[in-house]
Image 1 (cartoon, rainbow, N blue to C red):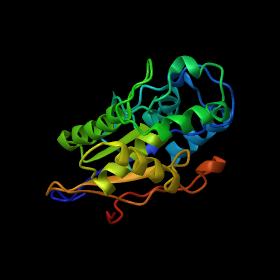
Image 2 (image 1 turned 135 degrees about the vertical axis):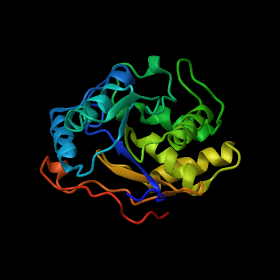
Image 3 (image 1 turned 30 degrees about the vertical axis):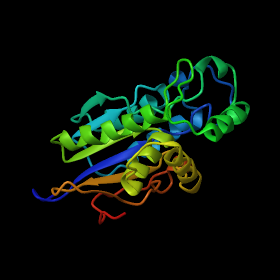
Amino acid sequence: MQANSFREVWFVRHSESVANAGARTREAPTYPLTECGFRQAAALAGALAVEPELIVVSPYTRARQTAEPAIRRFHRSTVEEWPVHEVQYLAPSLCVDTTQDDRRELSLQYWERADPRFTAPGAESFAEFVARAADAVERLVRRPERRVFVFSHGHFMSAVAWLILSRPGVIDSAAMRRFHQFTHAWSVPNCAILPLYLHPDGVHSLGGLWVPEGVGQSRGGQAQAGADPSY
């Protein structure tokens, strides 16, 4: 990578968790991977054909388990835990021993309310979640590393993409509704990679969202960096 070229961040969604597979779960931070998810994580690490200087990991179990094979492979990389975890907008007490289907009605009610500052007990508001995503991007801007992997989550990656593509000036009810529409039109599969490019002039741009070939089937496939950055 040339000295004056853009810096590159790969946001990586965790592989299949037990919640993704439809199981009943208790606390969102502790959802583990499925056996398939562990195979996907191993295949993903083998598909990353470039070495990062920094690996950032969400504190949630499923993201950490996804990152572990890559951390072992790229053992020279610095590893740090940042608050790049998934949004928790429902009260955790209402989610114990539930499935994603069980939580669907509660989720619909939350998004229909469209109050960006509403905070359920033990949860965070939409405004806080968006601020957390924006803070992560700004923290990456301040870092010196030229290539970073961030093992994170689907909604968090959607928030990063939405902030860069939409550039919302105010986080109000209308912005919250637009984000919800965005997440329905722009899905983030397990093991998906979202490249973020940090340019020397302060501009941020995105590459295309993609999953390394064969990772979903726990096979090979090489993920190459350095594609032209674009919106």
